[in-house]
Length: 619
Image 1 (cartoon, rainbow, N blue to C red):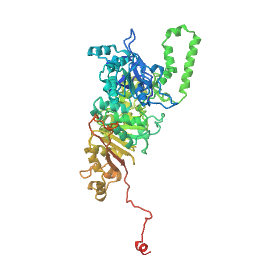
Image 2 (image 1 turned 90 degrees about the horizontal axis):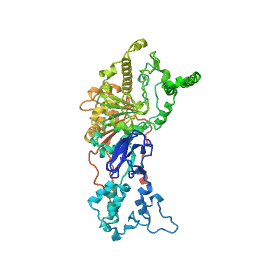
Image 3 (image 1 turned 45 degrees about the vertical axis):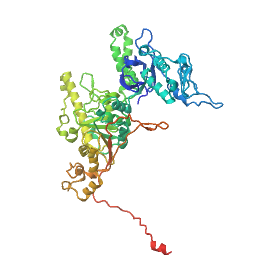
């Protein structure tokens, strides 16, 4: 997770009203916050998250507001003043504020107080002291609107005058006075807090401000349970195919042995589940030093050559020795870079001097990967756009970790790949002489189709070999139909976690793997399963009595969880009644097992405890 606000990153701006406004921080633009004002986006770029800013008054000749970082002593001045005891012991140091925050901070030694910012006199106390008669004011609606348009002192003047104009403020209790001040502060103060767009923030924003049905009404605690029961974690360092092995796809070289850190996902939440899992795996966020890499690339020999060639006037004016010296330096730099093992050193060429990458090169990792199964032509992972990754963009930046760790496969390619035209239509090999005779558009189309075929071939072959480390599902599909095809792809001991909005589909799934069905399967197996091997029984389609093979999964259970907010006050402790409703949500958990072939016998010396009751009674 980035610690600073990056350019073109998505962030959440928390307003005083509690609403969160999600937007993309584009450099050299103006961010508008409606009635609160506007400010340049460059003022928050490359600054830390969780800072609270205050929109200051507009300067003469400027059409935007400048920002001021609100210190913590000013944000929590009421709490600090209320935590101070009325009578300090001898030798104790009272709580004091900085000189710049002294005007806004109330005096210490009392539980709560209301201070007139102009005179500095205390006009209200928590002991319900009577107000001074000179402090009583009455503001009309026209005066309030005029003060709102002026917007001086970031709205603090308007809040103070509203408190002073309240004629019954002396009758308010401590709790009522604080509640009234908080209500006016949320309405008129011009402040906001910059929050990172992580998975919990994205989930909260979709549930509260957007369409909750788009993410199947899945809550943050449900996402956490899916990640825990699915045992999703960092799966180890990347293991890429050797760069010198061309002509053979990575799937053909991969052994069927178990590779740790490979998860299978069925996601119908628009990519929210994939984002939560990749965050646990450490591959959701792009590296923070991309800008540093860009600066280094600009100083590379190839960039220097382009810059040198783009100034013909300077070349013509320069002497011959100077030109030879510069080109000599560039060639030396190129030789030093080519001496290192790199991807460019193994590229082929069409004879025109331009390097061409091998079309059968598969850029996917072998560990710490995620394979998403989808039902459409393209997967719906739109929420990954908030993290700088677009699954629908074929020219995606390869620096993003998801470009080499996220693979997508359709149900057709997984179950019957022979019916998929992209998988079966292999582009034939063409000689270099014939490629050079083609036009540029035709050559580009040939290379693009060949690369797409190699990627799909690799994804389908590795997925059908199985040995995945776990299965996590959040889908509207029938879980029984999902388990029929994905359980054989899991390794022994792999965890299974399935989320559903309602309990009925998961109850039917638990019944398929119940102890009673497993006992009936062992004692009286179905006729269709007679004489089949264990591998054939794993792919058995099932019948009416046994929809699934109950011997492949153990420990099937069902659970749910919901975090409820409580109000904790003396004599008024109760759960908040303003919580949102919606689907409760349930999770099915189990473990993949591989049945032992043959008869299983228990061996060892039995522990027998014989108690001679009669002898002890006689003694």
